[in-house]
Structures are given as C-alpha cells and as structure tokens.
Length: 631
Ligand code: WTA
Image (cartoon, rainbow, N blue to C red; front, side, top):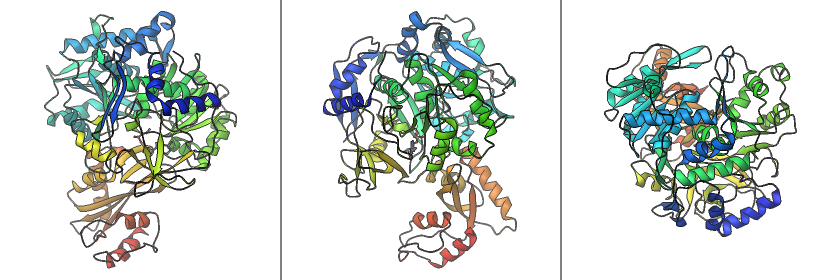
C-alpha cells in the first residue's frame, strides 16, 4: 500500500483535488485498504449536531490491515525493535508474524473472559511490546481501548475507568523508569476501590514484583494466553464503530473521552504517516511518544504498522543512563526518521555535545517535532546538531481530537521555515477567524485556528456526552471545528501556531486544563481556593504556576506547599506537579466574582505593571501583595 506523494507539485495537485472533491479524493485512498465490505457513501456530515460519517456501511477490521495483510510478503519483517530502559538489558525484536500470533492469543484470552464487541478495556501499561499487543487485541475483537498514560495517579485512573465504564483493565505489575520502578498494580488496586464496572484485571509481569493478586478478579497475562490459539478471526466492524477512547484535558471540567472510529482513523493515520515522514519500505522509524498519548497511538503504533514499517519502541527516558541515550539508540538501530517533542530537545540541548558526537547519526533522513510550539533556538539546534543540516525538519501540528497530523511539511518536499508548522495536508481545510467569526484573509494576522470541513480521523464525539463535544469544538464559531489554538499564516499560506487561547496549558507537551489542576489543589485540606496559570518555561515550554489561598496561618509555608504538591500527585499524577506555588491572601476577582486570570498570567510571567484595565477588580490592593509575593 503506497500512499506517498512524491513531489511538491503532486502535493499541490492532490491538495486542490482533496478540497474540491473530498469524497472522490478519499475514496481512492480508502480503496487501498482491505475491507470486508465496501462502503456505500464516502462522506456524510454536518458540524451543527455535529455528525460525521466516513465510509458509511463499510465493514473492516483495522488489525487485518496492519497484521494479516503483511504476513504473506512481510511476515518475517521486524515490526518493532524494543529497547529496554536499562541499556544493559538485551533489546528484543518482534516480527509481523509473531506480533500477529501474540495478538490473536490475547484476543482469544479476552474472549474467554466474556469480552464482547463494544466493551471498553483500559490499558495502563509501560512502553513494552505487550502494550502494543494489548491495543491490537482489543481492536481485533472489537473491544474499545482506552489507554491511560502510566504516569497518571490512581485517582485519575479511576475517573477514566468510571467514565468509560471499563470491564477489563490490562496492566503490568510495574514499570521501569530510569533508575526507579513504579508500582502500577498498586495504583490499579487503589483505583478499583471506586470502580464497580471492572470485572477483571490482567497483569503482565514486567518488573517481577509478584504483586498481590485478588482471587477471581486478577489474572496473570501469561496464564491467560498460555493455551490460547494463535489464530483469531477478526471481528467485522462498521466503519463508524468506535476504535478507541482517549481522555484529554480541556478548559473546563474533567478530562473528556475523545472518540475515534475504525475506518476514518485508519485511513488518515496511514496516509499522514507515509506522507509526513515520506516513509519508504526499508526505513527504521522512531517516534518517542508514549502509547498513552495520541502521538503514541497514531505514530508509535497504528501508522507504522498499517504501513508495514519497522519501528523502535523505547521503554525508558532520554536522560538515562545519560543524556546521550536517544543518540545511542538512533545509532544502534540505524533510525531513519526520528520524531520527538520540543521539550526533549530543549532539555537535551543543555548537555555536553560530545554525547552526540560519539554516535553515528548518519542513518537519519528526517527529523520531526510534535506536541507544542518549537522555539527557534531549539529548531536550529535540532536541525544542525541532530539533522546535521541535511535532514528536513518537520514541525507537525495536530491534536488528540484530530487523530493525525494536520499541518506539516511532507518530509523534504515542502518548504521549511523555523517555528512554522507549515502547510495543511491534503484533505485538511484550515482557516483563521477573528473574534467575530470572520475569516481572516490578510497574511501575518493572528486568529483562531479552525477547520472548515471534515477529515477522516476527526473526533466523532466525547464519550457519553455528545453535547460536550458540540459545546467544546463546534459552538464557538458556527459551522467550524475550533481547535483552541491561535495561529497566523504567512503570505505563502504557511501556518505558525502561537499556542492555546483557552485555559489549557501544555507542559512538556502534556495537556492539562487549569481547572483540573485547581480541582486537585482545592481537595487539599489547607486550600480554600486556587488559580492555576501557565508561564513560559525554558525546558517545559510552559510551567504550572499555582496561586493558592489557604485556611491556616502556619509558620512553615513549605509544609503547606509540600502537602499541596502531594494532593496534585494523588489526584492527577507527578506529571502535573506545579512548578511554582504561591500562597496568597486572596485571588484578584471582578465584582461579579470571576478570577482575573489575565492578570495572574502576567504576574507569573514576571510582570509587575501594565495590567491593562483593572477597573473591574473588586479589591485592587490584593494585587500589590501578589506581586510582592511573586518576587
Ligand atoms: C499543541 C498532541 C505548536 C497545540 C499531538 C494543540 C502544537 C495541542 C504542535 C494538542 C506543534 C501540538 N506546534 N503546538 N507542532 N503540536 N501542539 O492533544 O496547542 O496532546 O492544540 O496532541 O498541542 O495536544 P494533544
């Protein structure tokens, strides 16, 4: 299946075609896949409800497209080279044939537990091959997977399990992270104290910690698959059946379950993978994203496998045992495409360059960035030091909700401009709107980034709450999908992402709603009220700044702060730890009781004057205290 565009002229041609006749365009691409039954209608949509249907009445199973169809010609091709956290541990490789068998065994194991099409299964696992097996086993039998990043706490896990009403949890006893071990099973046990939907927990032995196994509920992964057949018929799925739910943060309330469906997601993820990375048959692809995030779903797992690619799967972190680990892995496996996040680049930039020079990076053909704006300094460093100034650097903009890359160069075919994600992929119809909802036509003018027409892998709904999907994405500007990002476009049509325009912050490429962190803080016994904002952070992109009003006059402020951090750990996870916590007497509010975040953001940025209009402030004297405290 070759979906690749080979020249910039072809890109321009295909782009025009995709916009003037999307149905025809996607019809041809979808025909490259293996279907159990062909669709009758390529696209049905309206953005009011919203209702989006791609490839109506088509029947398929995504795993037949990413496993079975490769077996005859490429059964012995490596699907993944797995690299352990500990560099002393031997790496492992798995072929497409072996992956197929492992997936089938687990699929049969899940069926033996009574799992049926449509049931939800939460996966809370490390970066190991069995996690990929778990994902694909769900897809094979039509169960809906919901992966929860293994850095989330037991409370966050419980929230997601309950929202998805999951029947099964797939986890491991623990995970290896740098020189530490994290006990995942214990997290699951404590989460399940408040989750009644779960019938079984399947536990993979990863760190040999021999966890407590609850009789009748907990099942050893190996025991479950031991006697299962290595063949399992793939469930016939409707094009629009759910493939997975992935929870992500928004401006308000709890994280919402973004729903992706079988056919559209498959088609767009494979198409974007092959084009953005200019994938060729013998490439060794490496996306460093954890499977718990959308980048891991689309470009660590689904995109490469759909294309029959060989990828690297890395269990560890970029700085263990030292900050040369990424470069060493690229050298070891002769990686051709390397795709990572700006936060990793900014952190690795600060280390001794001899760590890079020691390794041979000449296998690289392309390098890519994802998850947050990449600043010019990091862009140049990545391009020069890692790409040796002769690999195209693609800056890919997209979201959990978009399923696949939306704005990006196509490998070296497209023009490149530091800090600009670039042009839209074929099939993607972006625009910038002003506050009144008018399309901005003049170049270099900032606006709200919206998408005018549907693309195959777009969000269909938020699980269990369609109204929320409508309100969040389709109500700000009637008739448009609103991304939540601000952007501008140059005279050549290239887009530069400015950042979120809502109360979402992006910390090391991880998305958090400020409300979600405030919620966790407010559960602390000392906290009365809090306001969380993002501020520029040299490595993380944005740091978390929390202003907290407390109910006690304790001498030891650091004790309160430690306790607040502990609450955030408990309710979300260590990944959301505030970088700065400032205890304040009160929060600046308007007369109508609204917290003036604009001002708090400025103070967090180090500003002490120029707050703009403060006339609506209820108690202006509070500001001086807060500014003083911030120093
Ligand atoms: C931000 C990650 C600038 C953006 C794939 C978006 C980016 C949010 C880029 C989605 C980029 C992602 N340049 N900003 N190349 N890529 N973002 O859902 O604010 O974890 O809305 O998806 O990350 O984050 P999410």
